[in-house]
Image: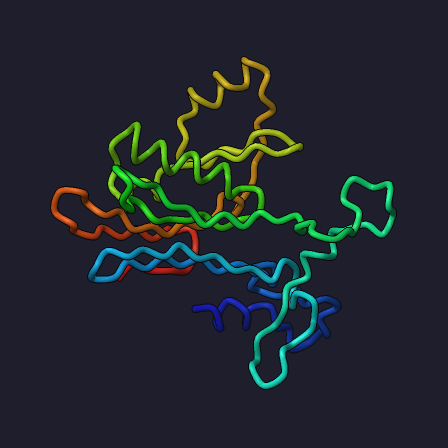
Length: 205
């Protein structure tokens, strides 16, 4: 289907002046979570930051290094000046919820500054609304930014109207609501329940 869609852009009688990529090149983050038979849990996220990261590949490994240090300033007066023992700005948020000191919910939401916002919404879906691991990630999300408040299309029009009346600037945004993966561990039975966000490529198995 993708090949057919791209082929439609070809005009045999006229050269194309610009051929934008059909698949976004901005994706750079991978999240995964694993729970083993002993109920040890791992919540892992990795990101290059920008396309091709630093452009440096570790010899003999094929592993490309990130460029999050690019957010530093060489101005010593700048609040994000390059200095010893400082950590680069990042939005990497692998998460785990414990219950009675044991892993209960291992999860993550990729997507830049959507990560902490998405985490709060997913946890609220589990804890406050009693959703399972799949529905907690599928539920419609919102995203606040300097441009305004973006709401996914499944959020009711009455909610949009109510937020607008309260002074929120509602904006349209597509593909900006993150990508979730999670495993919930039932504390009574130890049964694992996986969830995978339909907004991104991924799966639970």
